[in-house]
Length: 249
Image (cartoon, rainbow, N blue to C red; front, top):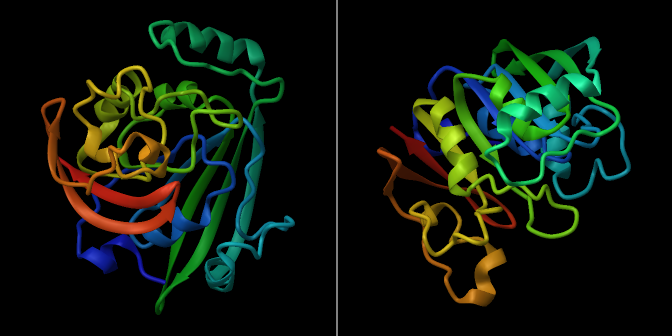
């Protein structure tokens, strides 16, 4: 298993990894970044299950990757679960009234924090993993200094978040929190469907299979957006189409 740094010899800045609407897609981001990122924030309105926790699909698509992570996990220190009152989130929702996409406040909202001690070659490293069972947009406004924005496997239809994370409104919020030299990793999920022809960040999502029927697929490339340069690093996986990484300066 190789990290993004090992595959492409790219420097990863200090900061957190933020993955909104993640489902249980935890293993791949850990594989790509656990040698460079120490703090992870995974967000979904449903329960999020870590690779070392039992669930029926555990040995499915990423069988070898799950085994690799579990075999190198020395210690899992489960910390307290912090429950969040629904009213607190409703108040924070007011700060997002200019965002027209769906903001969901489920009945049960909480944060779970795990501290892992993991083997990295001849050394060990501490990973701090936070799982937010709550709306991802509300979580975004609570975070800062994002080093890696990881976003894959979301959809426009039923079962998807209904939030256009690669659309201009939300992606601008992400870029405001993405540090210089930060990394964007995505399979092209959820640009704004009403503004696709106007969006200048098309290289982020035009490779996604979601758009194949529109005959607009193209090879990802470097580009400029919102005054920042996006340099293509390379392909690093597959979800709803190939997953690519860019470095943003």
